[in-house]
Amino acid sequence: MSDATGDGNPSTASDATGGGGVPARRRGRPPRSESSGTRDRILTAARAEFSERGYEKTSVRSIARSARVDPALVHHYFGTKEQVFAAAVEVAFAPALRAPDTVAEGPPDAMGERLTRYALGVWEDPATREPLLAIVRSAVTNDTAAAVFRSLLAGQLLRRMAAHLDLPDAELRAELAAAQLVGVALLRHVIRLEPLASADIEQVVARLAPVVQSHLTRP
Image (cartoon, rainbow, N blue to C red; front, side, top):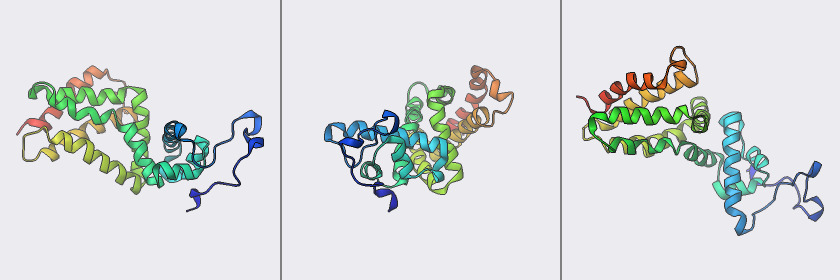
């Protein structure tokens, strides 16, 4: 695999910095004490690359270049590009993965409002919205990225949510509720369809929560 190798001979003391005094990217594996920081730096670079370039145009080499490490380190910590994407998705999707917990907290007849308020809150916060948007953009344009996203969505979000619903068609109900919430989020934050894009969030929650409640609990 071409991305698994570096671009030349190991650096020496004389090339410890790049042009303009910028530290040169490390080659090979870092000392054990640095491994956690290196892994986090690679993951941060991967999220930025996938967000800016999309899945298809991002490569292990471009991620390594952004993280200023040898491409072999990306393979060492994460494996293939698909596995790097899966790790980046899981980190970006982490706030949304707490949504099933809101289903179980509180009375069943307020489940729809709790889930709607929590899910839309994730999308309203720019810090959590931007990574999610990057994931969605990659998932809708690339089959491999879509498969990674689908696996995470089904295995760690929807099935957990369905487990809190004591109904025979619980998984379908959870998927319909999620589709309702994601659809609103995309129209509001990606397509920016008015008046939804500018509507007060409390108004949106008030109108959407009964629909989500219906998906989750009503016959």
